[in-house]
Length: 306
Image (cartoon, rainbow, N blue to C red; front, side, top):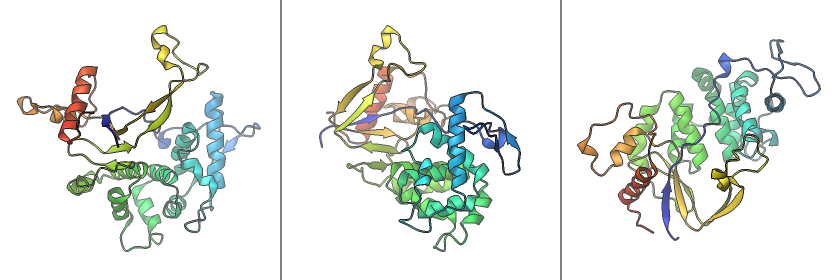
């Protein structure tokens, strides 16, 4: 397989925009006809045309989904793809947040259990995190074919679904529902999961889940020259859009590295006290300390130098 390395990154949370419960969605249709809520209230125009377009598209797509859940596996409606990563990121994020205003939870739960596309399934899980937990559990009654309730089913998915996106979104939903302790109880079992060399996720002993990207890989990095807000500084000429190749596989942490993880991986961690706010992301780390952390973790995981 060649060499194998660890990468860490702090992903931009495209979904963390605030809650719909505390803000008014302001959009107009492209033909100028005001959008109205189910209560008949006129929703005012958004000043940013791009945001207005996104809101219009997601509203139209979600309204079309009312009563349009799949009848079973293999009959998935293409319109549910608005919840997948295959659509524009802002459109997906808007639909995830707007769903709780426009769709009954039962519609999403029914589609969740009929859905075959992993990315769409992940988006539905994120959307359900904005509904009331009791409402979602009630809606799941009669839909789930087993004798277990929805949280137990989600815990089973969390432990057994090999898709990294579904696993991470189940984890997020369970955390929102206050089930952190139940997931922690599964950690010793999940740490025995073998490293998926062909892609997937696994749980090391010292950090959060790792997402494996099997090599070789080719990807585009940088940004288009005409991208709004692009930094044109001469110091950032490497921002030019270009193709790069990776001849090896990499594993990327699915979350930010926490203060506790950064401290615990240290070779002489016991010589200093555990950090305050241990679950907060570590920051203000220089390149050499970051590289030292990655190399130390590779050593603890038994991954040889390339």
